[in-house]
Length: 136
Image (cartoon, rainbow, N blue to C red):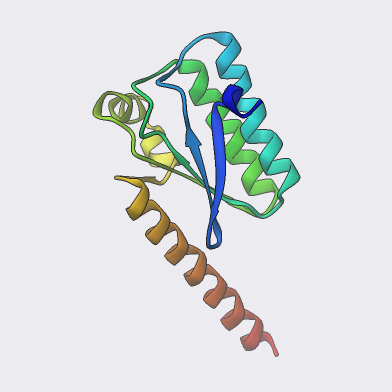
């Protein structure tokens, strides 16, 4: 079963890293599988701070962009966040052409992604604590 998974999830502190394991996410079958696996994880783990790592991915179909928007919406609705990392230059260019680089926070690599995503969570928590304290 694990061999069939396109996304392998691992907890790294407050961040859930989802490593996309396929070299390409192309056809309708694995795009659907990718979306179902990521959405299923988010639904089972509310308030997930998900970092999808595309290090092993050489090519994405445009259908994946729609799945990423759905996953992002599900994360937000569940009180979490979605970030992306390790996009190769061709995939990054697709995000730039479609202006999705303005929608998604994209980190250079996994190390930077974990560090900066954790920092954004910490800052948000501090801000919420400050606002709560200010109301009292």
